[in-house]
Image 1 (tube, rainbow, N blue to C red):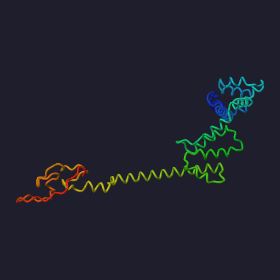
Image 2 (tube, one colour; image 1 turned 30 degrees about the vertical axis):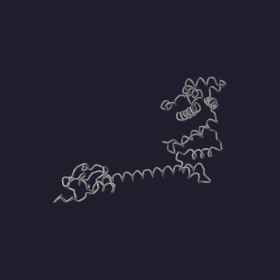
Image 3 (tube, rainbow, N blue to C red; image 1 turned 180 degrees about the horizontal axis):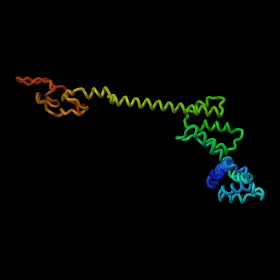
Image 4 (tube, helix red, strand yellow; image 1 turned 90 degrees about the vertical axis):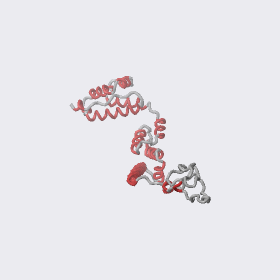
Length: 264
């Protein structure tokens, strides 16, 4: 009854990376067989279940593999023969090239990068050198060049030590970024309460009354330019700021200062 409550694995995908697809199907089948206790049943039932689940295209491959009649009734033998068939399609040199070309992506956390490397390493057949190859790829493939410094300083760097250092570096970088963001937000809130800061030099320039018109304005915007003073009849200033004495008894008025420039 338990067998019918647990859904069977998806059929073998015969497109794309056949080796990885087979590894996934084989592992899914083993989990299904264990969960449904197929091992306790007759071999013919186990084999028939496997052949029914694997899919039409994979079944066609299975039928063309060299096996005796008895072997075709044994699910374990069928799995072994199919594994040999698909593994022959794996190019070890290419698999290692893919592994050694893998670097941490821009939007990828270290643990995601680690998981991707673990998956790629399973098809490279590194043997006893797997930990060393894995360690070296972790360090050289890190996105942040600064994070490589700490593991490179270690003269006896192991795989686990490299993983620990990289995780710590990422955690510290994330905490520092959050602290910097918090400080920026706090500063922005304070600025909003106080209002924007003014440049003291610019502020004094705009608030000082103009000696030609008596008003405050931006440089070059004096409205007295070109106008005639009603007090002394001279140009480029207004009567309210005129410093000349009135013309009386034919006396000349006090000489006027220099004219305001257009860019005052």
